[in-house]
Length: 625
Picture 1 (cartoon, rainbow, N blue to C red):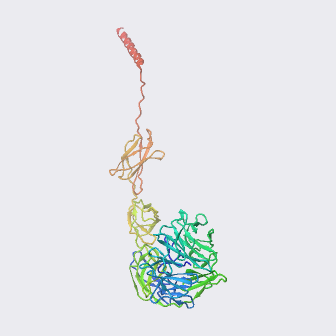
Picture 2 (picture 1 turned 180 degrees about the vertical axis):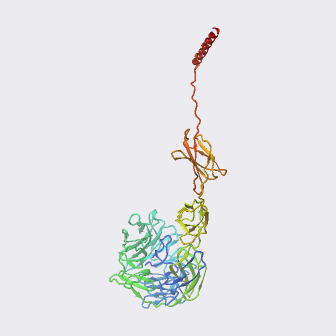
Picture 3 (picture 1 turned 120 degrees about the horizontal axis):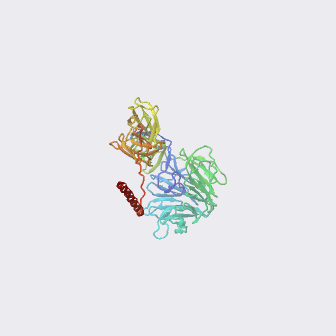
């Protein structure tokens, strides 16, 4: 069977893949504490961390079938009281167990040395080639650091020339004549299979499935997020994509597939995947065999039925074990560090505590982290207490993590105080920028989302608002402030840090009315307060032009539309504080266009000449008379 193990890259945080183990330390949620529980994000806060589990009568850190890995780094077989099967001086960090004719286990040390045992016998080292260590184990199989796959006796499995492997998943089938099988992902992204220690051969899959992401028994998650059974794409609800799978063999070849959101699905013999109905709000945190560990700390069967749990204990991890005529058994670690067992078969039993006499041990602390940042310094002051100095860290609440090693020098458990320490934002915002104020309001820019507060010279708050996402703000003042009043403007962020104040003096005096030159209706010009906004309106009060007076006060406003002769215009100047002058009126003096004289043709000129001649003759005749 495939038990607790390795986290596959890209799988959602919090979901544990149960398809092989690696030589890594096991994580435990500690019942300890930290004092104080908060400090500045700049770090340098002295804290005291208490981890009671650092010394104890021994607790379980991982289960795999009838095998338990203790906090002392030893492997135990069975219960009440259980038998220690580890060689003297050897400490382990992970185990993998499965059931065939023998109740077998592979245990791996922190430096990747694999050991094997059957039916609770003594663990003996698996003879891998010189320099090769165990990268992963599943079922009877070991994935070596050289990319090859080895049987539990050290025999290398044959395969295509030059092929290496990145993932291995073992399973068993054929009760009562057991066979072991391995499904592996090659460096080319294809899936390869073998029976017992036979030759690895490729499984034909659709191009959309490659490269394969994970295998579990005869099941594979493809690059497209779909689940494949022996190379054939399985039916699943439209739009559903999976991130991890767990498979086991009983009378049926079953699988549990889990989405990134923690929704679990179940299928048999490659049939359609159907959703497992868990209680509202509960998601799948881990799957092993027929069992699901819910986000609520309870254990569920593949039909969504909770496993009877009379003590009300919550669980942190589960392991699956199969024996007899298909009796499925779950081994779970409670939050108290003890192992609890239940089975489902001919008789369904409730989860019950199992006693294991484990060696008491005191672990040595090897590291302290806040979030993902290493503590500036730490000292283990007693068997269960550490003094640690916080590092600089972004504001927010984080896990506190303590890594350990055993007395033999092997990697010990990692203990976590979940969301135990809060880094406080202690950096105040920059002083807000403030525009000139006319005493009615104050505007400007400040840290986005900060609370902008305006106080008068007596320190009384006369207005507040929240800066927008662009940092802009406008604060209405109540009461309005007189000309010359000095105001103080600050910004306060969400953490309560307040900026230095920015002062502004109220300018409630309007500019002088602008001087206006005669206008021809095309434009208006003149002089006004330098930098003021000059506005021209027609007799109806409609703005027909604006401009800004220069540093010398001169301005020219183009009018649109042009205004007719005799039109009365109003011109005002508004300063930066928003004070507007009295208006200056000007009447448009547009030049009158003269009446055009009709043009004469040639005949008209001839007649005009004849008329002039006639007048001349008449005048001469009068003279003679």
